[in-house]
Image (cartoon, rainbow, N blue to C red; front, side, top):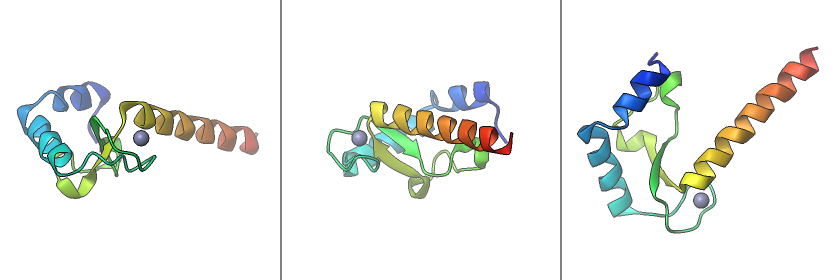
Length: 86
Ligand SMILES: [Zn+2]
Protein backbone atom coordinates (compact mmCIF):
# COMPACT_ATOMS: atom_id res chain seq x y z
CA UNK A 1 0.00 0.00 0.00
CA UNK A 2 1.69 3.23 -1.12
CA UNK A 3 1.93 6.06 1.39
CA UNK A 4 0.77 9.60 0.60
CA UNK A 5 4.27 10.90 -0.32
CA UNK A 6 4.70 7.90 -2.60
CA UNK A 7 1.39 8.66 -4.35
CA UNK A 8 2.36 12.33 -4.77
CA UNK A 9 5.68 11.26 -6.26
CA UNK A 10 3.97 8.76 -8.52
CA UNK A 11 1.69 11.44 -9.98
CA UNK A 12 4.78 13.35 -11.14
CA UNK A 13 6.32 10.46 -13.07
CA UNK A 14 6.30 10.59 -16.86
CA UNK A 15 4.68 7.14 -16.89
CA UNK A 16 1.66 8.48 -15.04
CA UNK A 17 1.59 11.69 -17.09
CA UNK A 18 1.66 9.67 -20.30
CA UNK A 19 -1.16 7.44 -19.08
CA UNK A 20 -3.19 10.54 -18.17
CA UNK A 21 -2.43 12.27 -21.50
CA UNK A 22 -3.49 9.15 -23.42
CA UNK A 23 -6.70 8.95 -21.43
CA UNK A 24 -7.62 12.61 -21.91
CA UNK A 25 -6.77 12.35 -25.62
CA UNK A 26 -9.37 9.57 -25.85
CA UNK A 27 -12.08 11.31 -23.85
CA UNK A 28 -12.54 14.31 -21.58
CA UNK A 29 -16.03 13.32 -20.42
CA UNK A 30 -15.90 13.46 -16.63
CA UNK A 31 -16.97 10.11 -15.17
CA UNK A 32 -18.34 11.81 -12.05
CA UNK A 33 -20.59 14.54 -13.52
CA UNK A 34 -20.80 13.31 -17.14
CA UNK A 35 -19.78 16.65 -18.69
CA UNK A 36 -16.86 17.30 -21.02
CA UNK A 37 -13.71 19.21 -20.14
CA UNK A 38 -12.12 16.82 -17.64
CA UNK A 39 -8.56 17.86 -16.85
CA UNK A 40 -7.38 15.12 -14.50
CA UNK A 41 -7.28 11.33 -14.44
CA UNK A 42 -9.08 9.87 -11.46
CA UNK A 43 -8.32 6.39 -10.15
CA UNK A 44 -11.40 4.17 -9.99
CA UNK A 45 -9.74 2.01 -7.33
CA UNK A 46 -7.80 4.47 -5.17
CA UNK A 47 -4.06 3.88 -5.04
CA UNK A 48 -4.14 3.52 -1.28
CA UNK A 49 -6.56 0.61 -1.80
CA UNK A 50 -4.25 -1.15 -4.20
CA UNK A 51 -5.43 0.42 -7.48
CA UNK A 52 -3.11 0.26 -10.50
CA UNK A 53 -1.70 3.79 -11.00
CA UNK A 54 -0.93 3.37 -14.71
CA UNK A 55 -3.60 1.02 -16.04
CA UNK A 56 -6.12 2.58 -18.43
CA UNK A 57 -8.66 0.26 -16.79
CA UNK A 58 -8.19 2.09 -13.51
CA UNK A 59 -8.16 5.63 -14.92
CA UNK A 60 -11.20 7.75 -15.73
CA UNK A 61 -11.29 11.40 -16.86
CA UNK A 62 -12.54 13.73 -14.15
CA UNK A 63 -12.69 17.44 -13.41
CA UNK A 64 -10.32 18.43 -10.68
CA UNK A 65 -13.31 19.97 -8.85
CA UNK A 66 -15.46 16.83 -9.14
CA UNK A 67 -12.59 14.66 -7.99
CA UNK A 68 -12.09 16.86 -4.91
CA UNK A 69 -15.83 16.86 -4.19
CA UNK A 70 -15.95 13.07 -4.42
CA UNK A 71 -13.19 12.81 -1.83
CA UNK A 72 -15.03 15.24 0.44
CA UNK A 73 -18.18 13.14 0.17
CA UNK A 74 -16.29 10.01 1.05
CA UNK A 75 -14.72 11.73 4.04
CA UNK A 76 -18.13 12.87 5.35
CA UNK A 77 -19.54 9.36 4.81
CA UNK A 78 -16.77 8.00 6.97
CA UNK A 79 -17.55 10.59 9.61
CA UNK A 80 -21.24 9.63 9.49
CA UNK A 81 -20.38 5.96 9.92
CA UNK A 82 -18.18 6.77 12.86
CA UNK A 83 -20.87 8.90 14.53
CA UNK A 84 -23.41 6.07 14.01
CA UNK A 85 -21.12 3.62 15.78
CA UNK A 86 -20.90 6.03 18.69
ZN1 LIG B 1 -17.03 16.65 -13.59
